[in-house]
Image 1: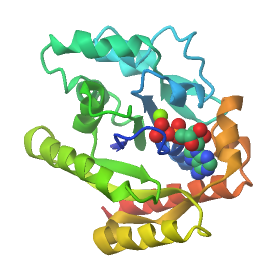
Image 2: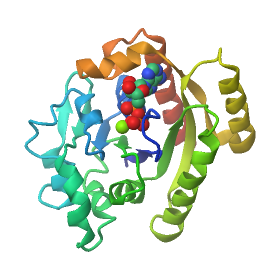
Image 3: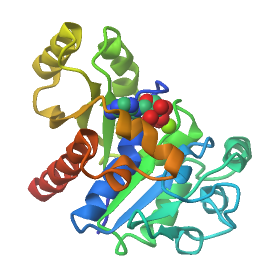
Length: 256
Ligand code: ADP
Ligand code: MG
């Protein structure tokens, strides 16, 4: 049975997409069968996995509207070693179309139940909002991975997300929990980042992943080649950190 994780944070530009594609590639590297689902109409995770969002015959939009199954719509990214259920601008319209439909927040969950045995991990890249799309992700998932930068307002922003996750847990998905907070774009030379990192650990304890993702220009360059950093430059510090993070995730899942 696949373990399903959302990568979510309602802030934009915090590293959700970078985390999703590199964790997917890292998990594939260590031998896991992975499906990456792009729930952001910007389609960055799709492009960043080597799939052209403008040329996809079917996307997550068709899955949400039940005109295609995941098996029909997902494609293998051969370079990356994982399957991609892509997104493009069409998905922005799904929000409006879904509102009128039954079980609107459980469409993705229903579709995923058919492929649960095809994968070890399903990773869902969420848009930077707490929208109906994100809700579909949260209703499908066993857990949430929250990438965050160790900045002054980081903890404040977390409160909204934690409350949303609590509400979804109470009303829609009893299995949902925060798996962990991932410190990303970390620069240990900046004293403030070190301090916020210490605060995070004091506050959230075990919920803070051991792995820390450093700020690394190779991770930022990789998307322009249509690849996750882990595939584009496996030797880069940031790529190695993501493979390490993949191992940590496998270990957490094993421990339960
Ligand atoms: P989100 O999906 O939350 O909007 P992205 O993953 O797109 O965030 O990241 C925002 C920007 O930061 C992108 O330009 C990305 O390349 C860059 N970035 C993300 N993680 C790192 C990192 N560890 N080191 C350097 N740049 C990064
Ligand atoms: Mg993104």
